[in-house]
Amino acid sequence: MVQTPPRIFDRSAWLHNRDRAAAGYEKAAFLKELACARLAERLELVRRDFTDILDLGCHGGQMRAALPARFHEQSVKITQTDPSAAFVQRARVANPSVQKNLVMSDDILPIAPASCDAVLSAIFLHWMNDLPGMLSQICLALQPDGLLLANMLGGRSLIELRGCIAEAEIEICGGISPRCMPMADIRELGSLLQRAGFALPVADAELLTVTYPDMFRLMADIKAMGGQNCLFGRISHFTPRAVFMRAAALYKQKFSHSGGHIKATVELITLTGWAPDTSQPQPLRPGSAANRLAEALGTTETPLKGG
Image (cartoon, rainbow, N blue to C red; front, side, top):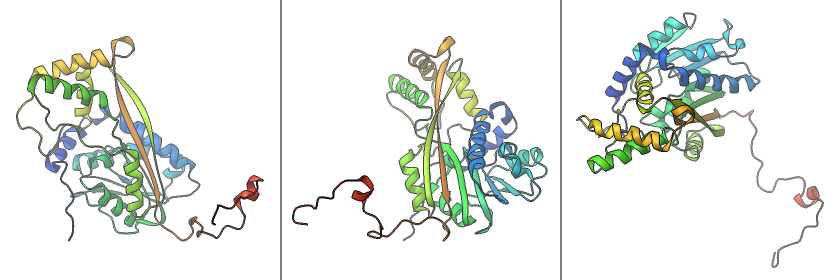
């Protein structure tokens, strides 16, 4: 029996938010630009040339600008793709030399199996309803020994905002409503890479701190990024203004930063994985070691009793 992936996000609401954000995205693109820069730094350390790159979740095309100089040569083909047609159009205009600009449909990669040698994705994969399925699609889309290099928001992101709104909502409304997306932690993501078929999987995390004058400026940036609540089960009526006023006061009280500003935590989890290939390092078979550990350590091996 085929298991149906959970429906976490309302796709129509998410696309509506994303399309609206595309028009003025440059005003709040700092996190995307930073995420792209982080991936570019990692890519620069890989001693390999990639000639067919997929930019997955391209937003306004920021990844192309961040790539190291050697990936700006004519021999390097780049495909930009995003579920938002408005973002794809922005990316097309920003990067007229990019060969392909494709609109994704229903969380399905719009490329053939084994058609690219690198997939780059900056702060996008946390929006997937079926993240394991998407990772499997990426692994299939890569040529043997192709690279996945992606980052996404982790579970510690916006922990201050989530906590303050929940506390205020309980205090004023007597309970909380679905409004914060579930986000995976680093251990889960490492396991998902392996489950999707990637070789040499690595997941690591970085904590960033962003400061704002107040909670409402933070929420305005979230909206400008297309990050409004699009969860299934979200409330259909307006949240009382008193909830947000109380949450803002709690935020200021608990998480004040220098100069009267507030701080917001962003956890950026970076995923690295390679499509399997026979040229990659393989683990040795148990019992195949040529040297004994005791000899390497300069000690005497003591057998266990009864062994």
